[in-house]
Amino acid sequence: MATDKARITVYLPQELKDRLAVIAEKDKRSVSVMIEILILEALEARDKGKA
Image (cartoon, rainbow, N blue to C red):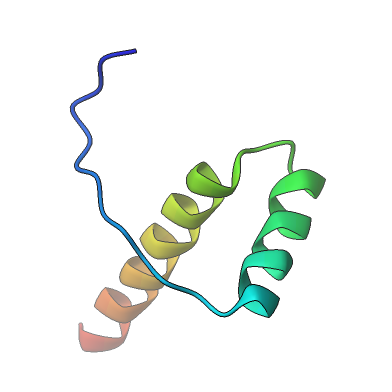
């Protein structure tokens, strides 16, 4: 599957990965997509705080 998204590697503590997996499963998403959503939300919140 071709994608225009950049690939990054992140090392996380197992506990954090497990927590992300639980959240992703509840939302019926992959861990990768869940991380993308959480990063976008964090960036938007950060941008609002700077306005």
